[in-house]
Amino acid sequence: MIDSLYGLVPTHGPGVLFLATFLSCLALPIPSSLLMMAAGAFVASGDLAALSVLSAALAGALIGDQTGYGAGRLGGAMLWRRLANSPTSGPMLRKAADALDRRATATVYFSRWLVSALGPYVNFAAGATQVNWRRFSLASLLGESTWVLLYVGLGYVFAAQLDQMGETVIPAIGFLGAGMVTLLLGRAIWQWWRSRTSSL
Image 1 (cartoon, rainbow, N blue to C red):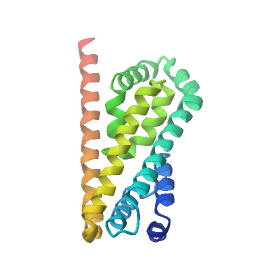
Image 2 (image 1 turned 180 degrees about the horizontal axis):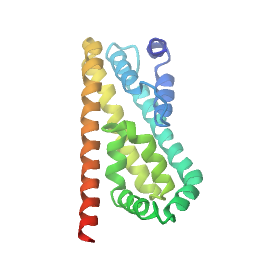
Image 3 (image 1 turned 90 degrees about the vertical axis):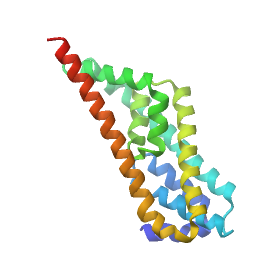
Image 4 (image 1 turned 60 degrees about the vertical axis):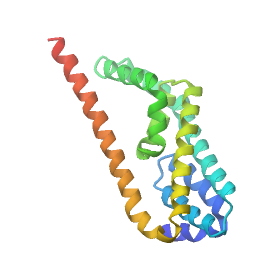
């Protein structure tokens, strides 16, 4: 299936990229970063136009983000309120919602490209916890622009070494993202432990 997608890039590049980035923002396992790198290589060879590639990839990602946010806002808010009022899970969920609201811009921005596997879930959580739409949209625009420019740019600059780039860059960025998630989780656990010990 992946080879078939690659085969569509030189002939239907913008449409393929739009669909790939849109679906990946809805948590479907689409190799959108690799497809953007391939499109960047075709831009370098003159087979695709840079503006159409960048515009299509960015539009798909932004619409995907807004779809996830909207789904959370419409369908997730009721469930979130029910869990937040629970005597067992409520305090932690409300604290998490407050943290997301305070750091919404950074959280949304970095989950677009550095920790992109979390992006669809951040979209839904942001909608469900009523994160300000303008803040979400601005961070989404900045983050998705970074994502698209990074991968299309890598494909353009390293067109001749595209196979090697796919084997090294994607895992390296994934490793960096996983490290950041680990640090954030460790910090959250440390803060929770300190609050528990100080109340004893």
